[in-house]
Image 1 (cartoon, rainbow, N blue to C red):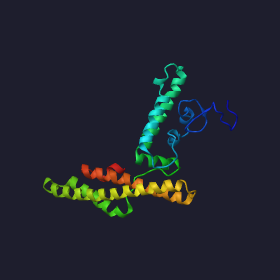
Image 2 (spheres, helix red, strand yellow):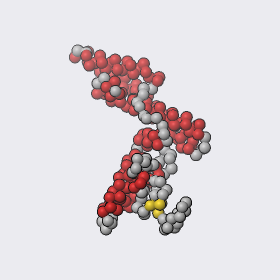
Image 3 (cartoon, one colour):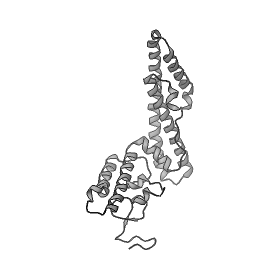
Image 4 (cartoon, rainbow, N blue to C red):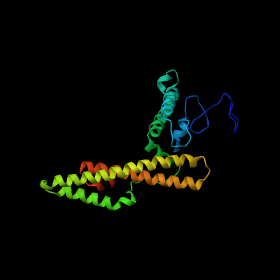
Length: 225
């Protein structure tokens, strides 16, 4: 039995919300009623960006066995439906947390950050405008000029790839700072790191789109509309 504020030995606790629950994984209430599940809690993790991927996968397989309806044929239909919802929650949590960039974006959203919108790195704004102009000229140029313009486009793409590599390194460094800040109790520092992560991730999205456009030879602005 459960007394208010007390969890007895016979009580199972939801890994996502901490409430009393059935033995099989996170409870369905975390995925309903307009609430937002904490995928880190679902997978038994704290809100940190450094994740042991092998351990995450092992947890995923264990939880999948616990909550997948196929392993509970004898349960009543209502219980199996509930388990199906929990299984979907576990799957979504795993897919979200196994990818570094998706994990960063999700954590920032979970922490109440602004919506992520692609933005050009400030130091490359002039280069971005030049690249977009180059693509427009390439689209309208006669065949005799295409080869020369294609070479210019390749050089521009290489320039942005180099910046993207540097940006990835900055993201990883800031992620380490986030994990340090998370346990420091310094909310101001944590806020600064969170904003830096948000800006870097937004710039990464923009550069990834721009490089794709350059490789395809289409106007860069089209994918950022």
